[in-house]
Every structure is written in C-alpha cells, then in structure tokens.
Image (cartoon, rainbow, N blue to C red; front, side, top):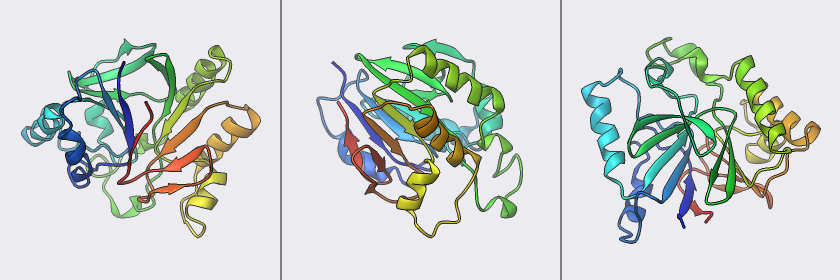
Length: 230
C-alpha cells in the first residue's frame, strides 16, 4: 500500500525545504507519493533547459514519486511539450519517471482512493509580468477543461475521496483570506461544483495563498505543512 502526502506550493526550489525532513524517512519508496497543490515551478526556463533539468533531478532524487497540479506560476509553453498519457484512470504528463503532472479535470485512483484534480489560478500581479516569460494566459482553465471535469465527475457519480486544487472556491476564500483581492471565475466555478453540482468528497486540499489553515472539517489550505492522507 502506498503512503500518500499532500503539501502546498514549492515554487521550483524556493519552498522545497519543507520536503527535506520527509526525504530522510528511509521507508519511503517510489511507490509512495507527495502531491504538490500547484506552483510546482520545476518547468520554467525552457523545454529541457539545463537549469530545469537540474531542478527536476532534485525532485527525482527524492525517495517518493512527486505528483503535482499546475498553479498560476508554471511555464505552460514548456509544459505543453510533454506528451499526454493515461495513468491510474486519468490523463497525465510524465515529466520524468519520478515527476508527474496531474492534469485538469481528471480523476485518478490510487490504492482504491479517488483523487479529483483541477489546477490553475489567476495571478493578481500579471500586470507586472511578461507573457511567455513570467506569465501565461493558460494559467486559467479553458472551457474544454471545465467541461471535461464535469463529465469525468459525472462518470463517478460526483463522488471522490480527495480534491486537490491550487486555488479554492469563493466561499472558502472568504474564510481563508477575508480581505483578499483574489477573485476570479475559477473561484466561482469551485462554488458551482460543490454547491450546485453537489460534489461529494472526504477532504479538499489547496495551496496558492501561502498559509496553512484548516478552514473547516473538509477544507484545508496548505503551504509549508505536509499532510499524510494515507
């Protein structure tokens, strides 16, 4: 049986230190998983660039397999160069044997647990960033990705075990950051998913907001904390 952990943004290596203690646990293997809730950042400087390959090798050296949903700070031009394949019931992009991108609107089964993933999020600082260098419009899901997500969830009777996203619903955002300037269509869509579509799940984990906070019994914002869910 796999051990499964989830944590918040790592931003390439800026916030990777939280993984170091976990990496010293000798019982972990590549059959165990750490899921990063967006802003992985390991793809940034160009497809197969030396600097990115060096970053990816650091993640590959960890004893587990790293799974990640995309955030708003990813190089989506670079990410698009990786082929899409199927893994555990959903579509992925395998960056290397130890690093796997969990795509938007997909459902994966890992040790009989169902995970729904929906990356993406809006950059509130995009006006100071340069498109295709430090900002990509693909940070927000497309209409097809929204539709695919709903179709996939309906095939599973709108029921999963865990939801892993980068940002959160508008209702959760009010509790996460009461005075936040964050607010976009994806926040609204997550409300629609949970309230109107009656998505059922055990727990929803998300990153993006750079804090660790249990919002309620079923929603948790993660940044430095690592949660073992199995």
